[in-house]
Image 1 (cartoon, rainbow, N blue to C red):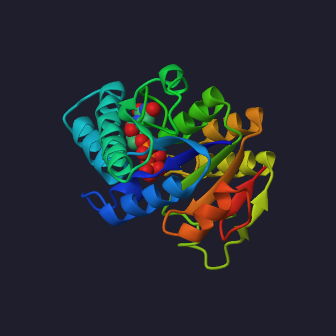
Image 2: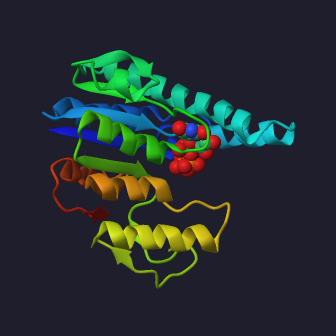
Length: 226
Ligand code: UTP
């Protein structure tokens, strides 16, 4: 089965340097799995720092996004290095378009961001659509979808499962409520998983057993959307 992993920059590079332990752990999980993987890497704090610096210097949003995309590709490149040296059959490059990525015949392909104006959430879903993957895992420092921000509201309700429509209304609501702050998964990405009926699991990147369960479509501590 083909599966897409959207790996947040918060996992690959949580604090300004790559997390070698995480890179080894995710490599081991992929190596032991029988499935094929498309992996989309996020930019995290490094991408944000560069985009913000570019804006401060007067760069356009388009140019600032392009600078941030370089950080996503650097994260993708270090993951390719981890996979290759961990004995995984991976194409030794960071793909920058979906059509090339879907044609390799290798067990694993890795991408970063693609064009300004979107995020790696959307890229991950587009990669899934292009590969024909019907399952996607979002691995980040967010452990599940909640009805409000659990850091601010101790009574926030965690969803163990939800429909595409429920996810879209939550993403829409939080888009309006807090311009400039991100919902776990961007609205366009939510709409794309709905149109292609891609089963999407939100799992904490540190929850290795949860990741293994989600790869098999089983339940875990996070949220499944289908
Ligand atoms: P991310 O997808 O990592 O951004 O891309 P994010 O959602 O803000 O990050 P997380 O989920 O907290 O890690 C980083 C930045 O790269 C640019 C955007 O500026 C984005 O905010 N980007 C990324 C693009 O412009 N196009 C892409 O296809 C991907």
